[in-house]
Length: 482
Ligand code: FAD
Image (cartoon, rainbow, N blue to C red; front, side, top):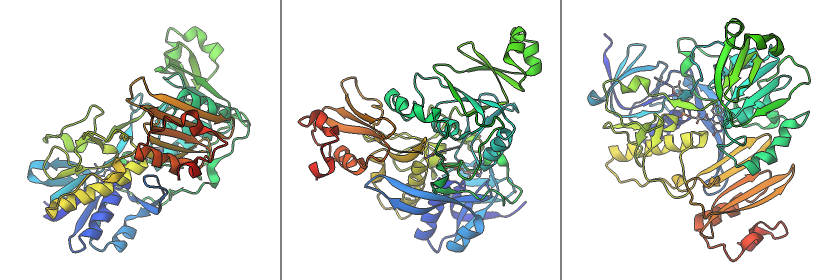
Protein backbone atom coordinates (compact mmCIF):
# COMPACT_ATOMS: atom_id res chain seq x y z
CA UNK A 1 0.00 0.00 0.00
CA UNK A 2 1.30 3.48 -0.92
CA UNK A 3 2.57 5.64 1.99
CA UNK A 4 0.20 8.16 3.50
CA UNK A 5 0.95 11.72 2.41
CA UNK A 6 0.88 14.34 5.17
CA UNK A 7 -0.66 17.58 3.97
CA UNK A 8 -1.68 20.69 5.82
CA UNK A 9 -4.39 21.58 3.31
CA UNK A 10 -6.12 19.45 0.68
CA UNK A 11 -8.62 20.84 -1.81
CA UNK A 12 -10.83 18.59 -3.93
CA UNK A 13 -11.98 19.80 -7.36
CA UNK A 14 -10.37 21.56 -10.32
CA UNK A 15 -13.27 23.89 -11.15
CA UNK A 16 -13.49 27.59 -10.34
CA UNK A 17 -14.14 27.10 -6.63
CA UNK A 18 -11.34 24.57 -6.07
CA UNK A 19 -8.73 26.38 -8.15
CA UNK A 20 -9.49 29.79 -6.63
CA UNK A 21 -9.33 28.25 -3.15
CA UNK A 22 -6.02 26.52 -3.93
CA UNK A 23 -4.45 29.67 -5.41
CA UNK A 24 -5.48 31.80 -2.47
CA UNK A 25 -4.30 29.37 0.20
CA UNK A 26 -1.05 28.57 -1.65
CA UNK A 27 -0.15 32.25 -1.80
CA UNK A 28 -1.03 32.78 1.84
CA UNK A 29 1.05 29.82 3.11
CA UNK A 30 4.01 29.72 0.72
CA UNK A 31 6.03 27.33 2.86
CA UNK A 32 3.22 24.76 3.27
CA UNK A 33 2.62 22.07 0.69
CA UNK A 34 -0.95 22.36 -0.59
CA UNK A 35 -2.62 19.55 -2.55
CA UNK A 36 -5.31 20.01 -5.17
CA UNK A 37 -7.00 16.74 -6.15
CA UNK A 38 -8.97 16.90 -9.37
CA UNK A 39 -10.88 14.38 -11.43
CA UNK A 40 -10.64 16.62 -14.50
CA UNK A 41 -7.28 16.99 -16.25
CA UNK A 42 -7.71 20.65 -17.16
CA UNK A 43 -8.15 23.17 -14.40
CA UNK A 44 -10.39 26.22 -14.59
CA UNK A 45 -8.62 29.45 -13.73
CA UNK A 46 -9.98 32.95 -13.45
CA UNK A 47 -8.21 35.53 -15.61
CA UNK A 48 -8.78 39.23 -16.36
CA UNK A 49 -10.71 39.69 -13.15
CA UNK A 50 -12.45 43.04 -13.09
CA UNK A 51 -14.45 44.52 -10.24
CA UNK A 52 -17.11 46.36 -12.24
CA UNK A 53 -18.71 47.98 -9.21
CA UNK A 54 -18.84 47.35 -5.48
CA UNK A 55 -20.31 43.87 -5.92
CA UNK A 56 -20.46 43.18 -9.66
CA UNK A 57 -17.51 41.35 -11.08
CA UNK A 58 -16.50 40.11 -14.50
CA UNK A 59 -13.79 37.68 -15.45
CA UNK A 60 -12.63 35.29 -18.12
CA UNK A 61 -12.13 31.61 -17.56
CA UNK A 62 -9.27 29.62 -19.00
CA UNK A 63 -8.84 25.90 -18.88
CA UNK A 64 -5.21 25.23 -18.13
CA UNK A 65 -3.05 22.17 -17.63
CA UNK A 66 -2.11 21.50 -14.01
CA UNK A 67 1.57 22.30 -14.71
CA UNK A 68 0.65 25.98 -15.23
CA UNK A 69 -0.73 26.20 -11.72
CA UNK A 70 2.19 24.30 -10.21
CA UNK A 71 4.65 26.61 -11.97
CA UNK A 72 2.85 29.66 -10.63
CA UNK A 73 2.66 28.30 -7.08
CA UNK A 74 5.70 26.13 -6.31
CA UNK A 75 4.10 24.88 -3.08
CA UNK A 76 0.98 23.61 -4.89
CA UNK A 77 0.81 19.96 -6.02
CA UNK A 78 -1.97 18.93 -8.37
CA UNK A 79 -2.98 15.28 -8.30
CA UNK A 80 -5.14 14.25 -11.25
CA UNK A 81 -7.27 11.60 -9.70
CA UNK A 82 -10.79 11.50 -8.30
CA UNK A 83 -11.34 11.19 -4.58
CA UNK A 84 -13.14 7.93 -3.95
CA UNK A 85 -13.47 8.00 -0.20
CA UNK A 86 -13.27 10.38 2.73
CA UNK A 87 -12.76 9.35 6.35
CA UNK A 88 -13.55 12.66 7.99
CA UNK A 89 -13.02 11.49 11.58
CA UNK A 90 -9.51 10.30 10.68
CA UNK A 91 -8.81 13.32 8.43
CA UNK A 92 -8.03 11.04 5.47
CA UNK A 93 -8.92 11.18 1.78
CA UNK A 94 -8.24 8.41 -0.70
CA UNK A 95 -7.96 8.84 -4.45
CA UNK A 96 -8.80 6.38 -7.18
CA UNK A 97 -5.13 6.19 -8.04
CA UNK A 98 -4.53 4.70 -4.57
CA UNK A 99 -2.97 7.68 -2.80
CA UNK A 100 -4.02 8.58 0.73
CA UNK A 101 -3.72 12.09 2.15
CA UNK A 102 -3.90 13.04 5.82
CA UNK A 103 -5.04 16.66 6.06
CA UNK A 104 -5.35 19.33 8.71
CA UNK A 105 -7.98 21.20 6.70
CA UNK A 106 -9.94 19.95 3.70
CA UNK A 107 -12.06 21.93 1.26
CA UNK A 108 -14.53 20.06 -0.94
CA UNK A 109 -15.22 21.81 -4.26
CA UNK A 110 -16.47 18.90 -6.36
CA UNK A 111 -19.21 20.86 -8.13
CA UNK A 112 -22.50 19.41 -9.34
CA UNK A 113 -23.76 17.28 -12.21
CA UNK A 114 -26.87 17.62 -14.40
CA UNK A 115 -30.06 16.33 -12.93
CA UNK A 116 -30.93 14.06 -15.85
CA UNK A 117 -34.56 13.30 -16.61
CA UNK A 118 -33.57 9.71 -17.26
CA UNK A 119 -30.24 8.10 -16.48
CA UNK A 120 -28.28 6.21 -19.11
CA UNK A 121 -30.61 6.74 -22.03
CA UNK A 122 -28.58 7.55 -25.17
CA UNK A 123 -31.49 9.65 -26.45
CA UNK A 124 -31.25 12.03 -23.45
CA UNK A 125 -28.27 14.37 -23.10
CA UNK A 126 -27.25 16.62 -20.22
CA UNK A 127 -24.79 19.46 -20.73
CA UNK A 128 -22.28 20.07 -18.02
CA UNK A 129 -18.67 19.98 -19.12
CA UNK A 130 -16.54 20.25 -22.22
CA UNK A 131 -17.03 16.59 -23.12
CA UNK A 132 -20.81 16.73 -22.92
CA UNK A 133 -20.89 20.02 -24.88
CA UNK A 134 -18.86 18.35 -27.63
CA UNK A 135 -21.14 15.33 -27.61
CA UNK A 136 -24.11 17.68 -27.94
CA UNK A 137 -22.48 19.46 -30.88
CA UNK A 138 -21.77 16.15 -32.61
CA UNK A 139 -25.32 14.89 -32.18
CA UNK A 140 -26.79 18.25 -33.20
CA UNK A 141 -24.80 18.29 -36.44
CA UNK A 142 -27.02 15.41 -37.67
CA UNK A 143 -30.27 16.60 -36.10
CA UNK A 144 -33.43 18.06 -37.62
CA UNK A 145 -35.33 18.59 -34.40
CA UNK A 146 -34.46 18.51 -30.72
CA UNK A 147 -36.57 18.79 -27.59
CA UNK A 148 -35.13 20.92 -24.79
CA UNK A 149 -36.57 20.40 -21.31
CA UNK A 150 -35.84 23.00 -18.60
CA UNK A 151 -36.13 26.70 -17.96
CA UNK A 152 -32.84 27.73 -16.35
CA UNK A 153 -29.78 29.48 -17.72
CA UNK A 154 -28.50 26.54 -19.78
CA UNK A 155 -31.79 26.03 -21.61
CA UNK A 156 -32.06 29.78 -22.26
CA UNK A 157 -28.64 29.93 -23.84
CA UNK A 158 -29.07 26.75 -25.76
CA UNK A 159 -32.33 27.54 -27.53
CA UNK A 160 -30.90 30.84 -28.66
CA UNK A 161 -27.61 29.45 -29.93
CA UNK A 162 -28.86 26.45 -31.89
CA UNK A 163 -29.05 27.02 -35.64
CA UNK A 164 -30.51 25.04 -38.52
CA UNK A 165 -32.50 22.79 -36.29
CA UNK A 166 -36.04 22.97 -35.03
CA UNK A 167 -36.28 23.31 -31.26
CA UNK A 168 -39.25 22.28 -29.13
CA UNK A 169 -38.73 23.91 -25.75
CA UNK A 170 -40.79 22.64 -22.82
CA UNK A 171 -40.84 24.97 -19.80
CA UNK A 172 -42.71 24.20 -16.60
CA UNK A 173 -43.55 27.86 -15.96
CA UNK A 174 -45.82 30.43 -17.54
CA UNK A 175 -42.82 32.32 -18.96
CA UNK A 176 -39.33 31.53 -20.22
CA UNK A 177 -36.26 31.93 -18.03
CA UNK A 178 -38.17 31.82 -14.79
CA UNK A 179 -34.97 31.47 -12.74
CA UNK A 180 -33.83 34.87 -13.90
CA UNK A 181 -36.80 36.77 -15.20
CA UNK A 182 -40.41 37.65 -14.64
CA UNK A 183 -42.92 37.37 -17.47
CA UNK A 184 -42.32 40.98 -18.54
CA UNK A 185 -38.65 40.39 -19.17
CA UNK A 186 -39.50 37.10 -20.87
CA UNK A 187 -41.85 38.96 -23.25
CA UNK A 188 -39.06 41.41 -23.97
CA UNK A 189 -36.72 38.56 -24.93
CA UNK A 190 -39.12 36.37 -26.93
CA UNK A 191 -38.82 38.35 -30.21
CA UNK A 192 -35.10 37.55 -30.23
CA UNK A 193 -36.00 33.90 -30.64
CA UNK A 194 -38.14 34.69 -33.61
CA UNK A 195 -35.55 36.74 -35.43
CA UNK A 196 -34.51 34.83 -38.54
CA UNK A 197 -30.82 35.65 -38.33
CA UNK A 198 -29.85 35.89 -34.69
CA UNK A 199 -26.88 37.85 -33.59
CA UNK A 200 -24.46 35.28 -32.28
CA UNK A 201 -22.33 35.87 -29.25
CA UNK A 202 -19.16 34.66 -30.92
CA UNK A 203 -17.66 38.12 -30.73
CA UNK A 204 -17.98 38.15 -26.94
CA UNK A 205 -14.67 36.91 -25.65
CA UNK A 206 -15.13 35.84 -22.08
CA UNK A 207 -14.29 32.20 -21.79
CA UNK A 208 -11.76 30.08 -23.59
CA UNK A 209 -11.96 26.33 -23.63
CA UNK A 210 -9.07 24.23 -24.78
CA UNK A 211 -10.95 21.17 -25.79
CA UNK A 212 -8.43 19.02 -27.62
CA UNK A 213 -5.72 18.18 -25.16
CA UNK A 214 -7.15 16.15 -22.37
CA UNK A 215 -4.73 13.66 -20.92
CA UNK A 216 -6.36 10.29 -20.30
CA UNK A 217 -7.02 8.58 -17.01
CA UNK A 218 -9.81 10.78 -15.68
CA UNK A 219 -13.47 10.00 -15.76
CA UNK A 220 -15.36 12.20 -18.22
CA UNK A 221 -18.34 12.18 -15.90
CA UNK A 222 -16.54 14.32 -13.38
CA UNK A 223 -15.45 17.21 -15.59
CA UNK A 224 -15.79 20.80 -14.40
CA UNK A 225 -18.98 22.64 -15.15
CA UNK A 226 -18.98 24.93 -18.11
CA UNK A 227 -19.92 28.52 -17.55
CA UNK A 228 -20.55 31.78 -19.35
CA UNK A 229 -20.11 31.48 -23.09
CA UNK A 230 -19.59 27.73 -22.99
CA UNK A 231 -20.97 27.65 -26.53
CA UNK A 232 -18.44 30.19 -27.78
CA UNK A 233 -16.36 28.70 -30.56
CA UNK A 234 -18.61 25.64 -30.74
CA UNK A 235 -20.79 25.68 -33.83
CA UNK A 236 -24.24 24.56 -32.77
CA UNK A 237 -25.80 23.66 -36.11
CA UNK A 238 -28.25 21.01 -37.17
CA UNK A 239 -29.04 19.81 -40.68
CA UNK A 240 -32.31 21.67 -41.21
CA UNK A 241 -30.82 24.54 -43.19
CA UNK A 242 -32.33 27.95 -42.41
CA UNK A 243 -34.91 26.47 -40.11
CA UNK A 244 -34.25 27.69 -36.60
CA UNK A 245 -37.78 27.83 -35.29
CA UNK A 246 -38.22 27.60 -31.54
CA UNK A 247 -41.60 26.38 -30.42
CA UNK A 248 -42.30 26.91 -26.75
CA UNK A 249 -44.61 24.63 -24.79
CA UNK A 250 -45.47 26.45 -21.57
CA UNK A 251 -46.48 24.99 -18.22
CA UNK A 252 -45.55 21.46 -19.06
CA UNK A 253 -42.89 18.96 -18.23
CA UNK A 254 -41.33 15.85 -19.66
CA UNK A 255 -43.42 12.74 -19.12
CA UNK A 256 -42.01 9.90 -21.20
CA UNK A 257 -39.55 9.15 -23.98
CA UNK A 258 -40.01 6.36 -26.48
CA UNK A 259 -37.69 4.86 -29.05
CA UNK A 260 -39.32 4.02 -32.42
CA UNK A 261 -39.89 0.48 -31.28
CA UNK A 262 -41.29 1.48 -27.90
CA UNK A 263 -43.77 3.87 -29.51
CA UNK A 264 -44.96 1.11 -31.85
CA UNK A 265 -45.75 -1.01 -28.81
CA UNK A 266 -47.31 1.79 -26.78
CA UNK A 267 -50.86 3.09 -26.68
CA UNK A 268 -49.72 5.83 -29.09
CA UNK A 269 -48.68 3.55 -31.97
CA UNK A 270 -51.55 4.82 -34.14
CA UNK A 271 -50.10 8.34 -33.98
CA UNK A 272 -46.73 7.25 -35.34
CA UNK A 273 -47.49 7.89 -39.01
CA UNK A 274 -48.67 11.42 -38.18
CA UNK A 275 -45.61 12.12 -36.06
CA UNK A 276 -43.20 10.97 -38.77
CA UNK A 277 -40.03 8.91 -38.52
CA UNK A 278 -37.79 9.97 -35.64
CA UNK A 279 -35.20 8.28 -33.47
CA UNK A 280 -37.14 9.38 -30.36
CA UNK A 281 -40.61 10.50 -29.37
CA UNK A 282 -41.26 12.63 -26.30
CA UNK A 283 -44.56 12.87 -24.50
CA UNK A 284 -45.05 16.04 -22.49
CA UNK A 285 -47.38 16.46 -19.53
CA UNK A 286 -49.72 18.57 -21.70
CA UNK A 287 -50.39 15.38 -23.69
CA UNK A 288 -48.49 16.42 -26.82
CA UNK A 289 -46.02 14.02 -28.43
CA UNK A 290 -43.11 15.24 -30.52
CA UNK A 291 -40.73 13.23 -32.65
CA UNK A 292 -37.12 14.37 -32.34
CA UNK A 293 -33.52 13.32 -32.82
CA UNK A 294 -32.73 13.57 -29.12
CA UNK A 295 -33.70 15.33 -25.91
CA UNK A 296 -31.63 17.83 -23.94
CA UNK A 297 -32.24 17.62 -20.24
CA UNK A 298 -31.48 21.02 -18.71
CA UNK A 299 -33.40 20.73 -15.50
CA UNK A 300 -30.85 21.77 -12.91
CA UNK A 301 -27.99 20.11 -11.13
CA UNK A 302 -27.30 17.74 -8.24
CA UNK A 303 -24.32 18.47 -5.97
CA UNK A 304 -21.48 15.92 -6.35
CA UNK A 305 -21.37 14.61 -2.81
CA UNK A 306 -21.37 10.83 -3.37
CA UNK A 307 -17.73 10.00 -2.60
CA UNK A 308 -17.82 11.92 0.68
CA UNK A 309 -20.97 10.70 2.38
CA UNK A 310 -20.35 7.08 3.21
CA UNK A 311 -19.25 6.70 6.85
CA UNK A 312 -19.36 10.46 7.57
CA UNK A 313 -21.90 12.75 9.24
CA UNK A 314 -22.41 15.55 6.78
CA UNK A 315 -25.47 17.68 7.22
CA UNK A 316 -27.13 17.98 3.83
CA UNK A 317 -29.47 20.74 2.66
CA UNK A 318 -32.81 19.98 1.01
CA UNK A 319 -31.19 20.35 -2.42
CA UNK A 320 -28.58 17.70 -1.57
CA UNK A 321 -25.70 20.16 -1.10
CA UNK A 322 -23.26 19.99 1.82
CA UNK A 323 -24.57 22.48 4.38
CA UNK A 324 -21.98 25.16 5.17
CA UNK A 325 -22.08 27.84 7.84
CA UNK A 326 -20.88 31.45 7.49
CA UNK A 327 -17.28 30.21 7.71
CA UNK A 328 -17.82 27.74 4.85
CA UNK A 329 -17.52 24.88 7.34
CA UNK A 330 -19.48 21.70 6.88
CA UNK A 331 -20.76 19.75 9.85
CA UNK A 332 -17.63 17.55 9.82
CA UNK A 333 -14.67 18.97 11.70
CA UNK A 334 -12.00 20.65 9.55
CA UNK A 335 -13.96 19.99 6.36
CA UNK A 336 -14.96 23.10 4.42
CA UNK A 337 -16.89 23.24 1.14
CA UNK A 338 -17.37 25.82 -1.61
CA UNK A 339 -19.05 26.24 -5.00
CA UNK A 340 -21.82 24.13 -6.52
CA UNK A 341 -21.34 21.24 -4.07
CA UNK A 342 -22.35 23.29 -1.04
CA UNK A 343 -25.53 24.91 0.21
CA UNK A 344 -25.27 27.92 2.45
CA UNK A 345 -27.10 27.49 5.73
CA UNK A 346 -26.40 30.81 7.39
CA UNK A 347 -29.10 33.45 7.73
CA UNK A 348 -28.41 35.38 4.53
CA UNK A 349 -28.42 39.15 4.18
CA UNK A 350 -31.85 40.43 3.13
CA UNK A 351 -30.44 41.10 -0.36
CA UNK A 352 -28.49 37.91 -1.11
CA UNK A 353 -29.39 34.39 -2.16
CA UNK A 354 -27.28 31.47 -3.20
CA UNK A 355 -27.41 30.50 -6.86
CA UNK A 356 -25.13 27.94 -8.47
CA UNK A 357 -23.29 30.41 -10.65
CA UNK A 358 -19.72 30.96 -11.67
CA UNK A 359 -19.28 34.18 -9.70
CA UNK A 360 -20.44 32.57 -6.48
CA UNK A 361 -18.14 29.56 -7.06
CA UNK A 362 -15.20 31.99 -7.25
CA UNK A 363 -16.30 34.01 -4.25
CA UNK A 364 -16.93 30.95 -2.11
CA UNK A 365 -13.62 29.31 -3.09
CA UNK A 366 -11.77 32.49 -2.17
CA UNK A 367 -13.65 32.96 1.08
CA UNK A 368 -13.27 29.28 2.09
CA UNK A 369 -9.49 29.67 1.66
CA UNK A 370 -9.53 32.72 3.91
CA UNK A 371 -11.64 30.88 6.49
CA UNK A 372 -9.25 27.90 6.53
CA UNK A 373 -6.32 30.29 6.89
CA UNK A 374 -8.02 32.16 9.74
CA UNK A 375 -8.67 28.84 11.42
CA UNK A 376 -5.06 27.72 11.12
CA UNK A 377 -3.84 31.09 12.38
CA UNK A 378 -6.56 31.19 15.04
CA UNK A 379 -7.75 34.56 13.83
CA UNK A 380 -11.35 35.75 13.67
CA UNK A 381 -12.98 36.31 10.28
CA UNK A 382 -16.22 38.00 9.25
CA UNK A 383 -18.52 37.01 6.41
CA UNK A 384 -17.24 38.70 3.27
CA UNK A 385 -18.97 41.73 1.77
CA UNK A 386 -19.65 39.83 -1.47
CA UNK A 387 -22.41 37.94 0.40
CA UNK A 388 -24.19 41.22 1.21
CA UNK A 389 -25.83 41.72 -2.17
CA UNK A 390 -26.63 39.15 -4.85
CA UNK A 391 -25.13 40.34 -8.13
CA UNK A 392 -24.72 38.69 -11.49
CA UNK A 393 -23.74 39.89 -14.95
CA UNK A 394 -24.36 37.67 -17.91
CA UNK A 395 -25.64 37.64 -21.48
CA UNK A 396 -28.90 36.17 -22.63
CA UNK A 397 -30.02 36.31 -26.25
CA UNK A 398 -27.06 38.59 -26.86
CA UNK A 399 -28.32 41.22 -24.41
CA UNK A 400 -26.27 42.26 -21.43
CA UNK A 401 -28.16 41.19 -18.31
CA UNK A 402 -27.49 42.51 -14.80
CA UNK A 403 -29.32 41.06 -11.81
CA UNK A 404 -29.05 42.62 -8.37
CA UNK A 405 -30.52 41.70 -4.98
CA UNK A 406 -34.06 40.35 -4.90
CA UNK A 407 -34.36 40.92 -8.64
CA UNK A 408 -37.44 38.72 -8.90
CA UNK A 409 -38.92 39.82 -5.57
CA UNK A 410 -37.80 36.47 -4.15
CA UNK A 411 -39.20 35.93 -0.66
CA UNK A 412 -40.81 39.38 -0.46
CA UNK A 413 -44.28 39.95 0.90
CA UNK A 414 -47.06 41.02 -1.48
CA UNK A 415 -46.74 44.69 -0.60
CA UNK A 416 -43.64 45.15 -2.73
CA UNK A 417 -43.83 47.41 -5.77
CA UNK A 418 -42.43 46.98 -9.25
CA UNK A 419 -41.41 49.78 -11.60
CA UNK A 420 -40.77 48.82 -15.20
CA UNK A 421 -39.42 50.64 -18.22
CA UNK A 422 -39.18 48.84 -21.52
CA UNK A 423 -38.07 49.89 -25.00
CA UNK A 424 -38.70 47.06 -27.43
CA UNK A 425 -35.53 45.55 -28.80
CA UNK A 426 -33.40 47.89 -26.72
CA UNK A 427 -33.76 47.69 -22.97
CA UNK A 428 -35.84 46.32 -20.13
CA UNK A 429 -35.45 47.86 -16.69
CA UNK A 430 -37.27 46.56 -13.66
CA UNK A 431 -36.89 47.84 -10.14
CA UNK A 432 -38.24 46.03 -7.06
CA UNK A 433 -39.17 48.32 -4.16
CA UNK A 434 -40.10 47.23 -0.67
CA UNK A 435 -41.21 49.82 1.88
CA UNK A 436 -40.11 52.50 -0.60
CA UNK A 437 -36.55 51.17 -0.73
CA UNK A 438 -34.94 49.49 -3.69
CA UNK A 439 -34.22 45.81 -3.02
CA UNK A 440 -33.57 44.43 -6.46
CA UNK A 441 -33.33 45.13 -10.16
CA UNK A 442 -33.22 43.43 -13.56
CA UNK A 443 -31.37 45.40 -16.23
CA UNK A 444 -31.43 44.04 -19.77
CA UNK A 445 -29.54 45.86 -22.52
CA UNK A 446 -26.98 48.66 -22.24
CA UNK A 447 -28.84 50.58 -19.54
CA UNK A 448 -25.78 51.96 -17.74
CA UNK A 449 -27.82 51.95 -14.53
CA UNK A 450 -26.08 49.18 -12.62
CA UNK A 451 -23.79 51.28 -10.49
CA UNK A 452 -26.40 53.84 -9.48
CA UNK A 453 -28.94 51.14 -8.67
CA UNK A 454 -26.39 49.09 -6.79
CA UNK A 455 -25.70 52.14 -4.60
CA UNK A 456 -29.40 52.75 -4.05
CA UNK A 457 -29.87 49.13 -3.04
CA UNK A 458 -26.87 49.11 -0.74
CA UNK A 459 -27.65 52.40 0.99
CA UNK A 460 -31.38 51.58 1.31
CA UNK A 461 -32.37 55.20 0.75
CA UNK A 462 -36.09 55.92 0.99
CA UNK A 463 -37.13 56.43 -2.64
CA UNK A 464 -40.84 56.96 -2.08
CA UNK A 465 -40.64 60.72 -2.82
CA UNK A 466 -39.39 59.98 -6.35
CA UNK A 467 -42.10 57.51 -7.37
CA UNK A 468 -42.09 56.64 -11.03
CA UNK A 469 -39.62 59.42 -11.80
CA UNK A 470 -37.01 56.91 -10.78
CA UNK A 471 -37.27 55.32 -14.21
CA UNK A 472 -38.06 58.45 -16.21
CA UNK A 473 -35.77 58.24 -19.25
CA UNK A 474 -35.61 62.05 -19.36
CA UNK A 475 -34.01 62.26 -15.94
CA UNK A 476 -30.33 61.49 -15.70
CA UNK A 477 -30.61 59.33 -12.65
CA UNK A 478 -26.87 59.06 -12.20
CA UNK A 479 -26.55 62.85 -11.78
CA UNK A 480 -29.67 62.94 -9.67
CA UNK A 481 -28.31 60.70 -6.95
CA UNK A 482 -24.70 61.78 -7.17
P1 FAD B 1 -17.20 22.63 -11.17
O1 FAD B 1 -16.80 23.69 -12.11
O2 FAD B 1 -18.23 21.65 -11.59
O3 FAD B 1 -15.90 21.86 -10.76
C1 FAD B 1 -15.93 20.68 -9.99
C2 FAD B 1 -14.57 20.03 -10.06
O4 FAD B 1 -14.55 18.94 -9.15
C3 FAD B 1 -14.20 19.47 -11.41
O5 FAD B 1 -12.84 19.75 -11.67
C4 FAD B 1 -14.40 17.97 -11.24
O6 FAD B 1 -13.56 17.23 -12.08
C5 FAD B 1 -13.99 17.81 -9.79
N1 FAD B 1 -14.52 16.63 -9.10
C6 FAD B 1 -15.78 16.17 -9.04
N2 FAD B 1 -15.83 15.07 -8.27
C7 FAD B 1 -14.57 14.84 -7.85
C8 FAD B 1 -13.97 13.85 -7.04
N3 FAD B 1 -14.66 12.85 -6.50
N4 FAD B 1 -12.63 13.93 -6.83
C9 FAD B 1 -11.88 14.92 -7.36
N5 FAD B 1 -12.41 15.87 -8.14
C10 FAD B 1 -13.73 15.83 -8.37
N6 FAD B 1 -22.73 30.06 -14.35
C11 FAD B 1 -22.74 31.38 -14.56
O7 FAD B 1 -22.42 32.15 -13.65
N7 FAD B 1 -23.10 31.90 -15.76
C12 FAD B 1 -23.42 31.12 -16.80
O8 FAD B 1 -23.73 31.62 -17.88
C13 FAD B 1 -23.37 29.72 -16.62
N8 FAD B 1 -23.63 28.90 -17.66
C14 FAD B 1 -23.50 27.57 -17.48
C15 FAD B 1 -23.66 26.74 -18.58
C16 FAD B 1 -23.51 25.37 -18.46
C17 FAD B 1 -23.69 24.49 -19.66
C18 FAD B 1 -23.23 24.82 -17.18
C19 FAD B 1 -23.09 23.34 -17.02
C20 FAD B 1 -23.05 25.63 -16.07
C21 FAD B 1 -23.19 27.01 -16.22
N9 FAD B 1 -22.99 27.87 -15.13
C22 FAD B 1 -23.02 29.22 -15.34
C23 FAD B 1 -22.72 27.37 -13.76
C24 FAD B 1 -21.24 27.40 -13.43
O9 FAD B 1 -20.52 26.80 -14.46
C25 FAD B 1 -21.01 26.66 -12.10
O10 FAD B 1 -21.79 27.26 -11.09
C26 FAD B 1 -19.56 26.70 -11.66
O11 FAD B 1 -18.71 26.29 -12.69
C27 FAD B 1 -19.34 25.84 -10.41
O12 FAD B 1 -17.98 25.77 -10.10
P2 FAD B 1 -17.43 24.66 -9.11
O13 FAD B 1 -15.95 24.89 -9.01
O14 FAD B 1 -18.21 24.64 -7.86
O15 FAD B 1 -17.72 23.25 -9.79
